[in-house]
Image (tube, rainbow, N blue to C red; front, side, top):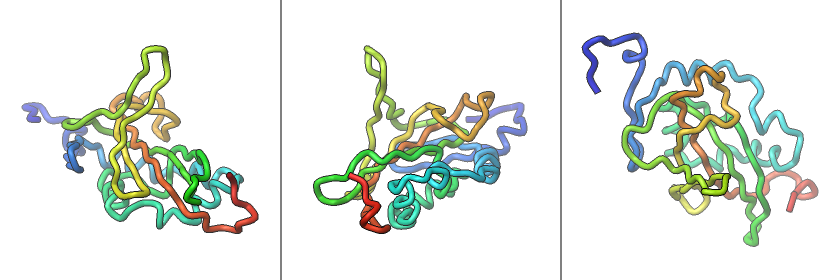
Length: 172
């Protein structure tokens, strides 16, 4: 990308490559939005599944994902949304959630799958046996205001986690 008439936004963009994706990222704007977030999804919830996620967060995110999120301007301790889906047969707990960053996908697949009769899903990539990630154009429950919903990339994740808080609080 080259512009004969650069503007302020052009100066704040940077390119980030991760696996088969290349993103154009407005790091400064993304970081500024996350810096303003005080109440995060799992911390705002009183359920034991969210309390467990928070207690085990450091172990849930692989190091490479923490580094990637930092490069994108995203605070990995500030999920936009978090869902506990179930306790798996192997005893781990299945979670999903997402973040957003200001930018566009330059290369790589938009993982969102829209169904003909409505609804959607996504195609994720495994990082390890307990963590998957996907990138798509979306702005569900974003920390960004509606005006900024254009050029947002939603980072979806799926993870399996141990139950690390009081076993009496464990959900099924």
